[in-house]
Image (cartoon, rainbow, N blue to C red; front, side):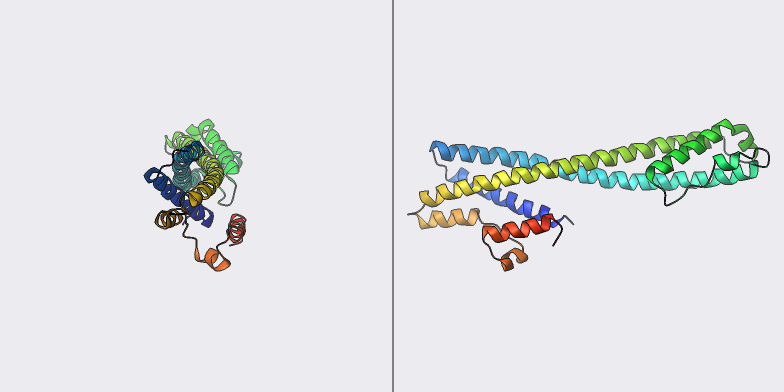
Amino acid sequence: ALPILNFIVRRKLDMAGRVRDFERDHPDATPGHVAARQRLEDRITRAEVLARQQVAGRRAVTGALITRDQLRAHIATALVMLAGIAEAASTEQPELGAGIRRPRSDGSIQTFVTRSRGAQATAVANQALLERYGMPAGLPAEIGSLLDQFEAAVNQRHAGQTAHVGASADLRAVTAELMQLVHQLDALNRFRFKDEPELLGAWKSASNMAWPMKVRDAGTTPVAKAIYEAGTKNGKR
């Protein structure tokens, strides 16, 4: 499920879209109104781009995590077998036991990669001896390939996380600007339609937001909404 902050941003974007549609259906030719409407259009387009980037970043992180964990399990399985073979071969070459050890399940990513790379290098350096004790000839190369894929998945996760965080921050800024533009248009339209109740009602409907129950319970004033959003941003709700 998306965090509540994203839910609120989506509500604001939905409202901005309705305002855009209303403005297209009921244009005003005065320069200030035209400028505000065009800026609203531009900011909505930017918000849509950022929303797609945010989703893509989140999906990249999720996919990379799944791939990373699967690869770590495969590497660990190969290293467990390799460590068992090295233990048997250590009767001829004692240092093998220290160079090739079973991986720890609670270690950090960097520690896991470092120890796995070290085990692989030791296996390559002692390949003939280890093969005599049952190591498949292609095992060191296979472990190396899995480690390359593992590190690529780690990098993909970091890139996805960076894209997601950056897009989320930009989206909040653009959404705040959209709200300012809606407030500006609200002032203009309330005056424009002061003698046209039907159009005034249509405008109020377009610029209204369906807030979560907690916001409605707290009150629908801008201050109440601001307090609620500040609380959700800080993880208090």
